[in-house]
Amino acid sequence: MKKFVLLALASLPLSLLAQGGLPDKPYIYVEGRAEIEKPADMVTLRFDLVARNPDQSKANQEVQAKANKIFALLTERKIAQNDVIAADLKSEPLYEKQEQIGRQEGKIVGYAVTRSFTVKVRDVAAFAKIVDELLAIGGTEFTGIETGLLKEKEVRDQIFEKSLADARERAEKTLNTMSMKIDGVFGVSPVAFPEIRSQIFGQDSTERVIVTGSYISTGDMASSQYRLAPVSVSQRVHVIYLISPAK
Image 1 (cartoon, rainbow, N blue to C red):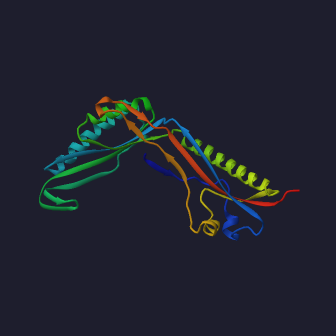
Image 2 (spheres, rainbow, N blue to C red; image 1 turned 180 degrees about the vertical axis):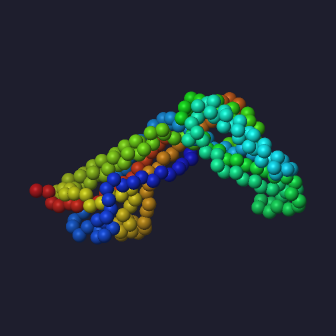
């Protein structure tokens, strides 16, 4: 399953921690966790448009002509211009023979011109047909299909709030057994507090919001059938609570 990482911002400042180090009062350090799984409602297509020709100029002309066809197709399929990235262009020589990877020998026999595309498809039901239509344009080579969420920020906000609630619940359960209570929050962070982490576990650790998703194809490409995996969003939040004896 493919993964990609999205950074989350803490909702509370860490200036107190940065300036004064660890609390000089009794405290409890808690890690809250939460996870949300939602059906994918967006698909990101990544593919290269490649043309090979003995003449570099002709290879470039072929790539640009086919790129225009792709732009026209995406416009016809109501893909917004902001959802299409096609800024990269690469030209590489083709050699007469290649004995091993990374080592070319012999004379140059042609050129390969490549233009990379990243396209967001916000209509999940339409993406399979778009894939077929793109592949029908010769020289299209797919490098990946990734699932995602249209309301990604809202989901990340929800998961952060859930992880904070989980941290509070964990802290209160622990303190109730010790006749202690929470007085306030000293610090909140999506990453571990290194001073505490190193003392307890002997090493630093970095945690982020993790979003995972993938696509699962059924049969060959001609079947035009895909089964999108749900998108799972998980979050860990680290909280330092100031505590005191319960009265």
